[in-house]
Structures are given as C-alpha cells and as structure tokens.
Image 1 (cartoon, rainbow, N blue to C red):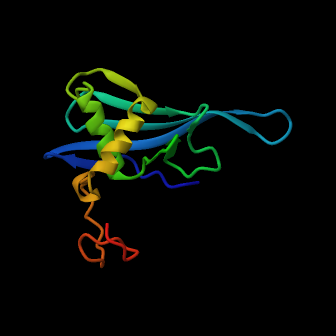
Image 2 (image 1 turned 30 degrees about the vertical axis):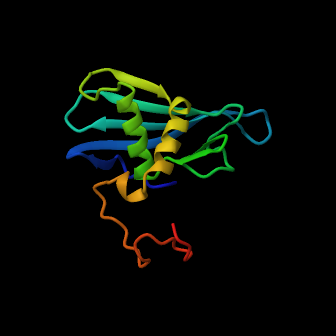
Amino acid sequence: MPRRIGARVLVVDRLTYRWSLSHRHRVEHDGGPPHYHGCVERLAVRRAGAPGRLEVLFEAGPGRLVPDGLLHSGGVIHGEDYLNLHQPRVVRALLDEALARGWRPTDPAHVRQDGWVLCTAVAARLRAAPAAEIGRSAEPPATDSTDEGSHPSGRAS
C-alpha cells in the first residue's frame, strides 16, 4: 500500500496553500476480474488560515483520460493537452486559473470546479511561461547541471 504523505505546500506571493491529490472510482465485481468505472482525479487546494476549499475534478469520459491502470497517477489528458497533477507548477497554474475565474479562498464555500473546463487554459499557461516562473513551492528547487537556457538534451530551448 502506498505511503500517504498528506498535503503538500505551495507558496504563492507569500501566501501558503496546501494541496493534495486523490483518485476515486467505482468497482464492479461480476465473478471475474473487477471492472473500474467512473474514475476521477481530485485536486484539493486550501489557503492556510482561510476557510474556502477548492476541489478540481477531472472525470473520465470520451476523449478525457485519467489514471485507469494505463495512465500514471496524476496524469490527465484531453486532446493535445496533458497535465501532471503531481507537479507543483501544474497545481500553481490551476490555482492561478481558478483565482482568475473568481474562486476566493477567503469565501467559506467549498467550490467544486470541473477540471476539464480549466485544462486548455492551464496547458496554455504552462506552455507560455518558463518552468522557473510557475510553481514556486516550499520545497527546495532541484539542482541542474545544464547551462541556463539550454535543453538537457543539448538543444537550445
């Protein structure tokens, strides 16, 4: 059984957010191997000290892929758009998009947001901004021996 690590920390403009990722589905047993239906990836975000909670839900459906045994945990795909919900920069981009669309962490409401509605805009945010500009988390940055501005494969970025 995987170890549960609890909420992760993301710091945005000196404000601390806590976030976690989970998966749920229905299991049907018909005498053979189990069948999994209704897979949903759920990203929960809260600002420390604020009452509001944001749940971003990615439900499986036609053309909407979520982890189902073939796709890795946290991966969601819609058309050409791919997000890895374990990456702090992706969570930051989702948070920024939700805030831009009106989510207020100080509002005591529990807001559920269809993640697919945000997916294309978030993927565009990620393509437009260098990784260093999105997803500053409380975790120390990874060190990289490649030169600034170069691709790890040696190609110019």
